Length: 142
Image (cartoon, rainbow, N blue to C red; front, side, top):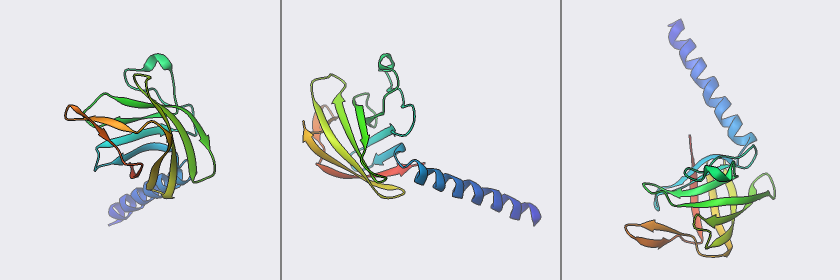
């Protein structure tokens, strides 16, 4: 009985600690949109992350990728407007298109990615380019 209680207590401490870290650094982690099979990996609070197959650029604020694909929109710069809003400048990995997006926190696990200006956000899908709506919901993945 004591072991079960101890295990439950330790697990709850990890869950609370994880939630607290999400609130302290809301713009760090992996965020997914399952409808379009896209994800955003970002670290806007720290040193940045390396984009797979683009390591020569060094740590960047992040990237947007497509599940089962190696095409990326690379985050070239970021600006934290408030505790809940970040503005990201992105280019595709060919360097031929760029855009600005806002990334807004609705709650600790739900964010809105909204295109502000520049090129349309497109990703490969079954041999064609799929245009992503100007506003989509992204959910934090643990």
